[in-house]
Structures are given as C-alpha cells and as structure tokens.
Length: 333
Ligand code: MG
Image 1 (spheres, rainbow, N blue to C red):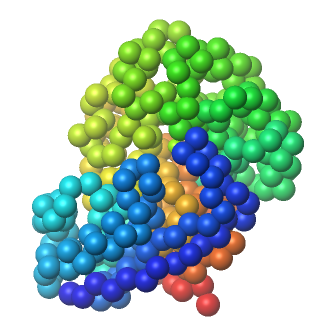
Image 2 (image 1 turned 120 degrees about the horizontal axis):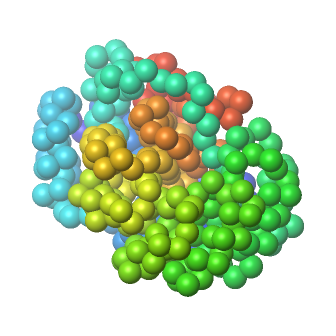
C-alpha cells in the first residue's frame, strides 16, 4: 500500500485562544492510503508539528504492508517505528479503517458494531476572549444544546457568566490545566452557581495531590483530557476524576479509542470524545465512535471557515453521520 499526504492550511472563523496559546490558522496533514483518508492535526504541547508528522509518515511507509485488514498488528508496528507521534499514528489508523471499510462496502460505525444515535448533542466551543466578545459569540452561534467555555485565566468566572447571559443551554468548562487546586476550589464553587455541568482538566495533569484535594472539597464532576492519551493512562485517575476525554490525535486512532471506551466503562467513568481544530476527515472519524460515549465535543470542523472536506453534519445541535462506506468523507467541492 502507498501512503500519500497533503498539507492543508485551515482558518479559524475567530481567534481560538486557550491556556495553550492562540491561533487564527491551523496546519494539518490529510493522508491517503490507496483511497483511505486520515488526518493528523498536531499540537505543539504534545510535542508534534507538521515536520514531526511528515518524518513519521515517511518512516511508516515501510511497515504498511499490503493487507488493509491487519489493523491490530499495524498499531503495534507503528509504535515500534517511533514512540509518541500520536496524531501521525491516528492519521494512518483512520486511513486504514476507511480503506478496509470501503473494501467491505460498509460505513465505519458498522465495522465497530455501532448503531448511530441521532440524539447525541455536540458542544460548541467558546474560546477565551473578553466577556463581551464571548457573550456575542454565543449569541451568534445559536442552536447548540451545550456550550463548552475555555477558562483557566484571570477573570474567567466573568467570562462564563457572560456566556450564561447569552444562553440557557448547558455549559461545560475546560481549564486546560490552567488552575492550581486552591484556585480551582473557589472558582468551581462560583461556576456551580452559574449551573456549569462539569469541569475539564482543572489542574496540571501530574498534580495528583491537587486532584485528591479537589475531590474532598467539590462535587462538580471532573473530566481528564491532557492527562490521558491511551488506555493505560486511565487507571491512575480512578477515584480522582469522574471521566476521560478521548481524542484520536492523542490515542493514535480509532482502534485504541475503542479499547479506552471499554477500560473507562470498567472503571465506571464517564466518557467524552473530543477533537483538535481539524477538518471533517478527523472529526468524522471520531464521530464514528461517538454513539458509544456520554459527551461529544466534536466541533473542530465547524470552527473553521474553509473545511476542504464534508462528512459528519450537525443537525439541530446533534451529530449526524454520513452513510457512505468507510468514513463517508468527501472533498468539499
Ligand atoms: Mg480539553
């Protein structure tokens, strides 16, 4: 099998700002393995960029082989090529699943035995800005059942209050490791008054003492994102958090994400499936598994103005999968 790749520059409709930085443009790589599509959306805070993705893809060509159904074995082989590089591995895993399912003539969700739900709401992200802008962005993006507000900076309670002013929908917040435990305790108590449903990654991923303290002081559910890449990372947060955020670009693809769902369920944890700023290739791949989880946060493709692909749609605030074979993704034009 032959792997080709193409770089895409995609543009945010408005500046996307979190504790990890701000951006108006994102560069991603869409790969094609004999007609199967996958996407790498690397982020600097996990040690990846376009160059590391390209280096990985060049090296990975040697282990692809000729059989698109050796999906389990391929994951092991890719881990031997280089450690980490999860977004690059995810691109290959997505493309191979897309190709295998196109050969079978079935949508990817069927390959995983999933009956797609039509009532799964995705959250829409309001990133960090001044409260007036965040209120305006919420008001100008109606129709979502859930808004996810980025916090983790001074003044963030006022920001969430401004979003609350603009909507009666559910609000979730994501601090992206921005708080200390001491900070988090009073902030979360304020957020409770605003009716926030849960908090994602309040503290640094390694602040286990902090998570222990939070657990004893607050009731709001805590979801771990930055601290969890693969299934093996889940047990260390059992008893300290209520759920995990799975992203294909952290897990290295669908296959590991499916295993993570089973492991999280075994530990009675809630599951969110999330994304980076990505095109409809990566978002549609994640959406294939979304019916198995509790919370979907798959809005990366609707935050950009020039998505080169079409795939999963949002209808009345809920995810609607395409029914074509594989990912069901097509070029936008
Ligand atoms: Mg997050």
